[in-house]
Image (cartoon, rainbow, N blue to C red; front, top):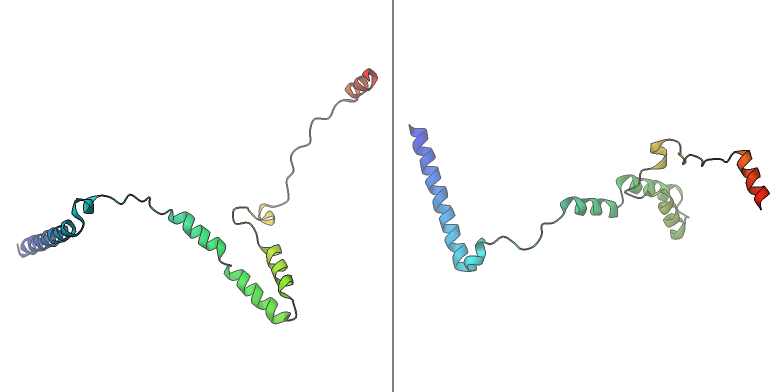
Length: 122
C-alpha cells in the first residue's frame, strides 16, 4: 500500500517537472521548441574511424621511440621515409596477413594448330 502511494507521488513530481520544462521551453523558444533539429545526425562510426586513422598508433609511437634511442644521428627526412614505408593503408589488408600472393589464372593458350593456321594466312 505504501509502495503504491510512493510510486504515485513520484509520478506526480515527474509530471510537474516536465510541465515546468515545457512552460520554460514555450516561453523561450515558442512553438519551434518542439520541432526536431533540422541538422542530420553525425556519422559517429565514420568520425571515430577517421580520428583513429589520423592519429599515430601506439605501436608506431613505441617504434619511433626505440629508433630515436638507438640512432640519434638520423635526419628528419630519413625518419619520415622509414615511417612511410611501414605504414599501411587503413582499408587494405596487410599482404602477409592473407598468406602468399595469389595471381589471376593464366589466359587460355592457343593450340599449336591454330597458331600455325594464323601464321600461314599472313
